[in-house]
Length: 552
Figure 1: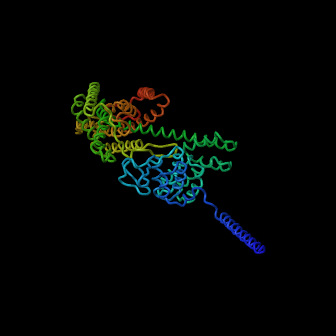
Figure 2: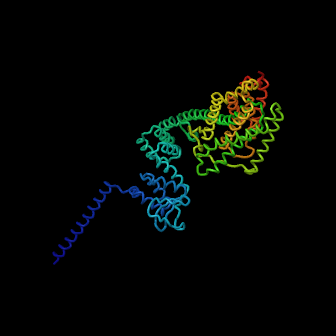
Figure 3: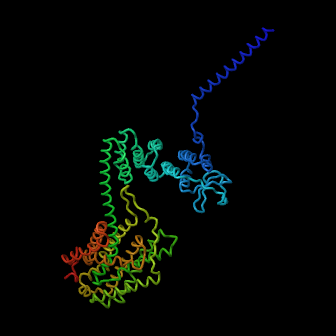
């Protein structure tokens, strides 16, 4: 009996030991599996999830989880990612609390992005997916990262520039991968700049030095600011010396581009003066009339542009193509009416002509106030005239001023062709040089006077179209340019188109450079004094025509 019990106890112990061995073996196998296949880090399930799953989880996630989700979304190759991140950054991303879908709202427009979104869901059942400042800061570079895969190279360049100086260090690996796959040289250059801005804080001095050398090639104010910020915390003496040289070079480059920008603005102002004065130069040169109503011809051209846009509100992009000939015709017809109705009775009496045209200018101003009210009117700028041409990070040229420069040159060339290649142009030049001789040769000088006054007034109307793109349209618009127009005509030489061109551009550039130094009012006074002194020395102006008004 005792032997039997002892055997049974021994057998039970063996079974327990065998069970323990099995448990130990199982634990070893689990440990080996853990070594061979390490546990997935937090958020790994997000990496394998598709766009729909990630987007739908945004609706119920907290701020910390949202940041993980948007990082995973930015890495996803789904065309809906940029739209989702843009809507989230703008605070326009919502969740349908009933359907569970994600939708972007822009006014009354709904763009479903993930899940089921009911088209007729009431606004009360759409809950905004909120973001905080930390999440916004993360969204901007992530959104730029998604645009690095855009098919348009310009979009990729803009995305790389956005990341320059703003991208977190964690995106360096992503930028390097994109850089390795990029085929466009301009995009690669922009990516190199973005990577260099990340490497400015690298602990290795050699890496920082290489990054500074890359950034030194860029003409960009943001890069200059970035290097100055690095200079404030740099501890390495050699790197600090390199930074100092690069910063000095970029500052000198910034000043040079600022000079180019001021020159551009001066030329644009000169172009406006050219358009305003070239018609006056023709009128004064042929007829010897001091037309104080010339500024009102500019005003009529600007109001014609405003009326044209009222008549074609759905075709603003084409409005200027209609406004230019319309403004020319309106101002030219008014000019011919003034010449035939008033001025032709006052030839040879310059003082009375000046007073008469001054009275006409007041009448036209009051007429415009009665029709359009005394308030200024705003003319819409077409899309192709909006914005600016970004030459580099230190220089941008606005399209409206650039086109005005080209437009003024085109008008001047067309006028030169008219005067040199057409019969009426030949007659105008003949009357300018010797009215009596031209009349004896059968030229109808009265008709030439009327056409000349109409032509000068029409060109002033075209100047009003250009000015409407730079400033508001009002009854006093032309008064701001009449004195400057006379200065240009007298300084350049009466009736000389080339002299008018040189004088307009010269006065425009001088005005732009003088105003920051002495102020706008004092700059005009100094220019006026200079012109008066110049005329005392050279009464005929820069380029004088030979004719009855210059002593021949």
